[in-house]
Amino acid sequence: MDPIFSPPLHRQRHQFVIDFVKRNKPKKVVDLGCSDCSLLQKLKFHREIELLVGVDIDGANIKKKMHGLAPMSTDYLQPSYDQLRIELYQGSVTQEDARLRGFDLVTSIELIEHLTLADVERFSEVVFGYMTPVAVIVSTPNSEFNPLFPRPAGFRHSDHKFEWTRAEFKTWALKVCLEYGYEVEFTGVGQAPPGQEERVGFCSQIGVFHWLGGRQDCNMFFGDDAEDVFSYTLLYSINYPSLHDNNILQRVLVSEVLYWAEKLKRNWIEEKTGERDDTYTLYPAEGEGEECLRASERHMEMEDRQTACGAEMKNPGEHQESELFWTNGEGQQESCKLHRCVSVPLAVLWSCCPKLSVLSGSLRNLRHVLMDNPEVKLSQDGSAVLLNDQEQDLEEEEKDHDDLEDSGYAVCSHSADPEEDWERNV
Ligand code: SAM
Image (cartoon, rainbow, N blue to C red; front, side):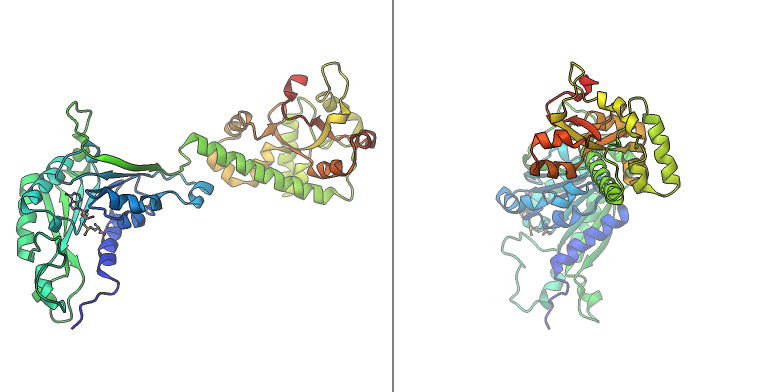
């Protein structure tokens, strides 16, 4: 007979933990004896976990794969509100470290059989007595299954100090429960062939321990303690990008705003290409922001989002007012430096992109965030995003500045010099 498992046994053990995590949604999880971080690799996708920690005595082994735990580019491109911090420590489970107290789940997968029996005692004190997690999953080989392996008798691995029968495992587990206030359920993975399940049990036996004090009582203990010990060495730590981080929230908001503003501008320009009168301003005169918003909203009601982008078009005579905006200090228009721009009201962006309202909460907040951001140019009253008219930029590359000056194609204009404080010139 060939007791080779499908899926492989190590995957079944990890799947057992993952199923537990899915059901119980622990926020703080530590994997003791994390080895090459393969379980952590899987757990990091369960974003209910906020703190994921790995500990192993073999720091070199951790280091080999630890960078695989770094966020992926999608985590940066589309951050969620979930928060995740990963920490990896080199240290022994026989030693206390205050950073590991108060966890929701501790996993110890095929670890204890690598300890001497004296160290298993110490492990029990540290994990159940000191760390006091809400739940603990301990897996270890079941020696009763060993005769089913097609190989000589002996331990499954040369580093194993013992392999327990189900009764031996049960004795240890029940003693722990009694001493430290836990209850335990016994189960396992790696099913024996039909008809032999009862006789030999699972290939890997598992004890799932639950603290009898309950979650709240459990975390109560851990205040600031002058005698806190930090015996582990931190090898790696990373915070995943989260929208709870203000910088990240700002970055996402700005890129959403710029994306949608650009998109609306394109649509509007395309729609107007044939009929655009270049003497119209696309930018509202000072003080007209509210009107502009209302105009946009009206357009939104008409479900004409693209037209709404240009809703603030003015008659040729009116745009003189806004052009003052772009004069130099002597009231002379510096037409050789002038660019057209398109104004996209924030209210229109707000209506077009539901994500903006989810992320910023209110139009006022959105405006506040954009005001401080150098990547976004807002109209003076803060009601609209101003975008350069790239079509004109392209034209400019083909023409010299004198031609441009003569073109009379001054829509809404502002200085081409990015360093210039254009607001000061209003
Ligand atoms: N848990 C891993 C998994 O599920 O893939 C595999 C564990 S491996 C069989 C046992 C691990 O325990 C090794 O990485 C070893 O370095 C670690 N280990 C042994 N003694 C330890 C101790 N006192 N403290 C922490 N880790 C220990």
